[in-house]
Image (cartoon, rainbow, N blue to C red):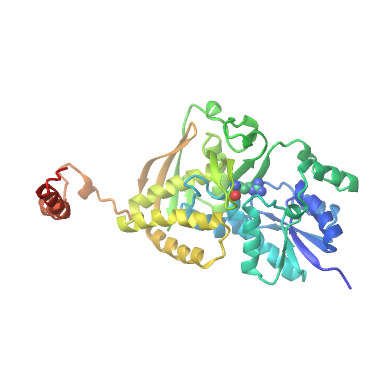
Length: 405
Ligand code: ARG
């Protein structure tokens, strides 16, 4: 009888490369490697596919999911201005549910008994992988070879060398743990674990430092339709392309560097470095257009739901019912978020310098102090009296009781 199969989320890096052999030796399974391209900058899909086979997989698949990532993962996150702790645009947290979706699909196609990931037990990604699988395919087993094995990086390298596993050469050198995709790049470990230490320049890849940013600003016009960007400077492009374009353009001006102390789901506080030039530019512009187009009660409520929405995604609950219910709310809220935003990229900042919309709730006639003014100021007198009535009544009682303010 043939051995059971496990589909491993394969990145081509050290951990998942050694995980293939470890699963075979310790779990007596066959391993199908599954790499998912979410815009992390894989140059050669064939090369990574071959690497999976060279590391001992019986089958190796590479999925180009860049468009799907943009349209089904980045798009809803942008509509919700999703930022964990109001700072982190959820780069890794967004890609995991998509990777799980493909792991499960490949597991079905190859008649596998389970799926596996290369996460340690200290992070959020293990939760996102496993809870995702529990939602999409509760019958599949979840394996976590790196967590179970508990080897240090150096020991893993030695173990791989002993067995002749072709590990990526970079892994002996890079002092950081990196994850990246179209929505940004993350860096942890090494010197970054000292929260007092200023991050060295070699941490960064997608952004220049403010010191090296050009002295001339770059100005761009973003067109949004129903909450999503559809064109840059009048040129329409698919979302995946638009995000990549902005990421590059804003990165040149040092936009989108984030240095933060983050509360992980597993209870650890960690120091994280992110580079999200495109994401920060888009969220900044989108929020501004919302301010122009959303009715104020809706705007207020939306802001209060955004943090919750980001937290759900961060905590691995992407496929759960609250997430999809909130998506319906975010879609409804975005139905009039259409128009143009002018953004200036300069010295580390993406600054909105103008906005306009055919469906704006901004009214010049209401706002102006000039002769075009249509606002009936006589109404204000009664309004203010009624608005202040509860406090007036309360203050009168306080005074009666000898408790003046
Ligand atoms: N702390 C971030 C998060 O939980 C980034 C995680 C990066 N993942 C990684 N395996 N290096 O979303």
